[in-house]
Image (cartoon, rainbow over all chains, first blue to last red):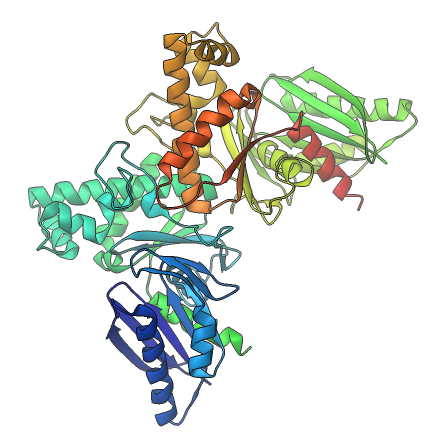
Length: 291
Length: 291
């Protein structure tokens, strides 16, 4: 049975049509910054048409969005980035598509995909940290991402790791993502140079790049040490764009985490090996509606 | 039915005999620093005799200890303070007492008491933070303290709030409990003056005391902000000796927490209103063995 999985990012929407075991179609579309909700519904409807033209009509959809999400009611409560409040996303999408729709939070749903299909599938309790334009985490407890009481859990990007440090867009100072997000690494080096290139230059012993990348790694290790001390996870899975740095991220972060955890063992660190955890997770949410 | 609840602290053991709704007896005994396990078993056995002399033999016992505890097997895995490793506490106590025994972690069991009887009884998901000689937390999720994968959760006292700050006994620097535990407040002011007196002097506008207390409150707020951003609790319950400061702790901490949480609401803060949450929790563990 075919389902739709759709992940709404700040600049790009990604989607897939999958049947029970295969991805049939992958599509991308720019996020509509003027009417993001309308753009999401249009994209989902076009995917449904596409599925029908393939001869396998979509039976359910999972749509995952950033910000604050109430999964049980399918409400997108708030996204500062996309400028919405209290959008009854599930009801709107079900009316438009005529099939059951599940709404999820992007990072938590990525964590679900890691739990079911990815690096976390042998761990019951782990943390999935997505490092991209921002930094956020899914706290997976007993194979299920834990949303907190109001869908605000996992905001590790705004944990202060440098008191009185650099200004963060959130209004605070010294937040983790001010030093270690892909956007921050680029901004702190030269905003015309993407983070992956900064890391490559650091690997080639370019001094300024090394300094900025080292500060990012220190900040990430501080954030993960705090997370480990509070939650005692079995495993931390690193995802998002920055995880494409591979061993250049993983190896120095492992070393730094061990140094910070003086009296307890360090959890395992793994890189995500899923292409699009949030899209894959969205298809899992959709498929569960049919189970 | 009478049960035994016993809380093992670093210097004092506290215990109670309770029947279904009342505390029959409360007892204290110094912790045996030379043979702490022997001291625990002797105390528990004496409590069982006491119950029998009252005409209501104890039917079960709950014993809660610090350090790392594996609750399912009843093993006290490690306590740096009491110097034990891999003690099969449940098996030893059951053999000595001849009744079912549950073993728990002191702070998590305090959190359980708050969930069942205390300030957390109207909240499903909350954090109980015990501020005493050290600082540790119980993460209560769906009314159950979450131990982490290996019983190491809730070590908020060792979250670094002041990078490169004062030396902590754990080997790291700048840990929360280096600034904000009762022991730290006393040590930083004058080790002959207990923390409660430092707080009283701060309330009376004594400059040095105000400075140290303010630094402790800032550190506590930093630790609680990080905890809130990660876990999104409904409520934070403040317990341990320092919570006896009452509004002198609660009011400035509420203010500081709101300031730190720029983009999300602050969880409620409440003071524990249980006399001995860990002892009460130990009796709950015991009673559940009979359910």
